[in-house]
Length: 150
Length: 150
DNA sequence: AGCTAGAGTTCCTTTAGGGAACTCAAATCG
DNA sequence: CGATTTGAGTTCCCTAAAGGAACTCTAGCT
Image (cartoon, rainbow over all chains, first blue to last red; front, side, top):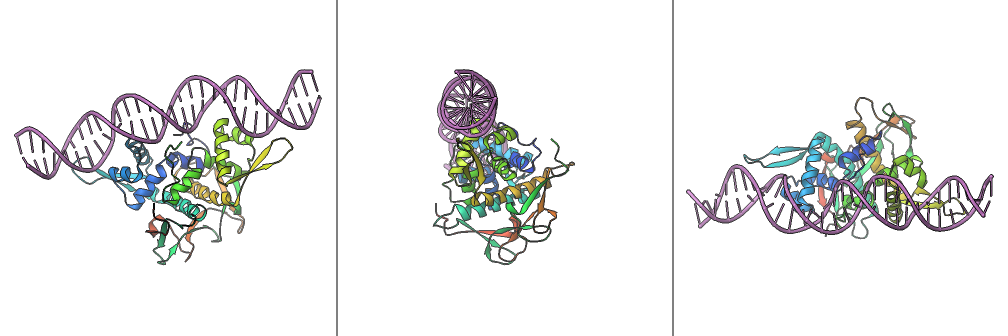
């Protein structure tokens, strides 16, 4: 919805929300990641209105997060994550981790993640790209960066 | 807006969106994290409608992400992140990292993060909690978990 | 007694989401 | 060869949520 455009703010969180902040967008990305790549599949799995699905897919394609790939002579296509989009799914994995921890309740997490490198069921952990130690919201100071103006 | 309630889905991403998926919510969290803790400060900094700000703050308090702390005899309070809320800010840091990388453009990132542990300007990196190797969206298989049923 | 400030409410307008029906083009069926 | 099916959208109407400005309420100050 978002009548106010967040994209103009000098804030990478706001700008990211301009791409995936609208209702349904993160779930569309999740579904494409999980292998639901066609319009009908997405619509059926999410139960989203066709109108809104069309709008969101166009928005995500426009922002280079998804790409449309034809799979037939007819105007038929599948949606796939671009490199930019795959990195955005990292955000979803962290969201999933938080939801698993704080909202899953008795039943436990609905989805498990098996890490290719070690083969184990695991979860993501935030580390400092510089020193490798844990890096969470309480472990940092915020400083104005070069793009801080307006 | 989100007429459809995501919280009932068997998906931790959807459930997390039920908490912070509405417009403005992530930015409110960001502001509280950055030290804007009072109603008037938040309203002025974000330019959000007072009505919507009230709704969002109540929602975030109800979900245990923020807590209301009185700072005066009068009904005056400040909003603070709970433990649950601080962990949610991890999601924002990953969003910021993506925005810095893909949307910041020429000017560079608007905000820099200094990691307390090493004192360096850095960014978060996703690692496997089990083996410590990088763990990104392309590095995992999704499997149904114990809470997978509807 | 009147003014100010923080923190919300109320009310009205505008816009975006939900949902069902409709369109359109190519392939396939009888 | 005409009729049906299928994927992928459009169109339209209705309702709910965002924007915005004005109003309220309470306690302390002058």
